[in-house]
Length: 420
Image (cartoon, rainbow, N blue to C red; front, top):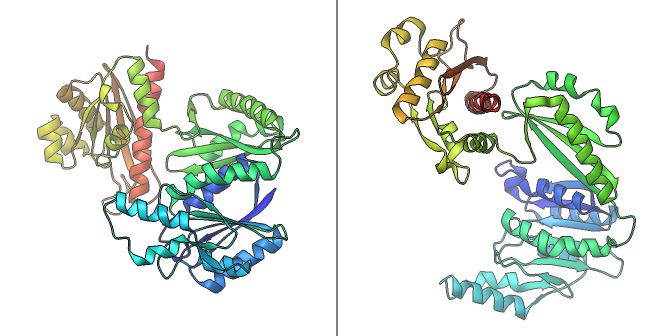
């Protein structure tokens, strides 16, 4: 089954809001065996919406839209699609009652008159209840077999309606219960600490072995994700081939691979610390608390993470972490002796068996020929063992800081893997 996706909103066209709905739809529909023939983004203008939806219906006969179902004047999707299908808008008593009950429950009664328009639906349309918001989804069909699926643009509401209302209907529509059903499934392996080019040399020979699966590399500040995709295979065959290919890749990747799917490296580090009954502390300069934020974003971090220090100024490095003044004077704050002293000071101050330390030049100023912008020294201690690495990261200030935080977590991860 094929369909077109049309995401609607001025904020999407202007780049003020990232279109996460399109990515979510791509993954979910592919897993249900539905192929997106084309994705189009248009502004909140009736003529643009009408042209995109009409073209989609002519091409595939099925279109899924997000956005433009709210109560304000720029929410035009429902009206435009109703006109295309030649259906008048009528008030749905059930939707109106649900809206009124929602506003009373929220203590916002009486309901603003403008919200009554959200109870108007194209005649004959199937209402898709939306318990997460005020705009219901809509499923509209005509005698020519054309289908328009209208979902709200709020990601949380769109996701709920997609899973609970839309996907089951699409599955039934294409007879997924029959033998021979096909899906598009992906599996992602996450790597860090190895450049994309070096990674390609490691995994290149594997690509012929995993056919008909495809392999794509997705670089970011966190590292390089490798996405395996099975196209139009039966579900069991797709899962089996993906598992075999992932195992083969893991052998080639060795300890550069730290997880699959949306695994967070901070969660991996915490799990290793927990398994070894060790506590962690961090001391940060150029990352300004990013590592601590990454760690505390993981539920349950408190059983392993003791705390951290943001020692940005040299005076704080001396007074709080006990970094000797002669090290800062002779070598500078961005140096191997300094990062060693910072890691040791954090361990001493917070009483943790393991520490991470980072100091560097994030830019855009402050660099020198000897220490250009992007220079970062990273240190990690596990007991009395210390490891330090120097990196010169590319990118702007934010990218350098993000790369440094990821590299620091990775350094500790590798040390923990080798420790008992």
